[in-house]
Amino acid sequence: MSTKGIAIAQNAGRWTAHDLDIADMEDLDSLVDAMHDLSSGTVIAFVEEDDEYLAIVRITARDPDPKVFLSDRRVLLTSDHAERLFADALPSMAGLDDDSDDEAPVGQASPVGDLDLLADLGTPTEALLELIAEEGMLPADVISAVSERAGAGEIFDDVRG
Image (cartoon, rainbow, N blue to C red; front, side):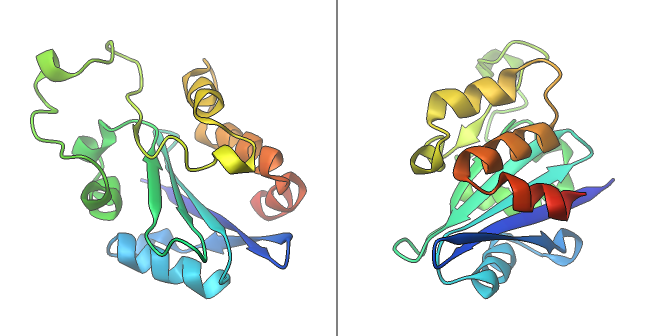
């Protein structure tokens, strides 16, 4: 499986983009530590794995606790990497494998986490959910759209290639 990570960090009102070595990270704390190394301001990390899901983690100088969003909670059962990084930061997955408890229709993503984590950066909850649900939209497309709305689209595209 291929897991990719990229972060955008804001320093003195300017965004910079950075690749993240997600493969060696053991848990959310190690990801957050790497994010803190990039900036003392706002940092947003995007993690995707084989176009199956998108995770967004945000930290700010005012709020030391990371905000976490996962595009589909079901990957916590299918991806060891997603489970290792994000399970402790999200609501319990107890009973998730019981189809009767899952409200999302088969084949539809079931987002979980902080849906408002990007609202002040141009992507309110409704817009984030629309991007995730849009047919044919890959995680990289969502990352690009979110970065563009935050004013970091050009630098993100330069790092992403």
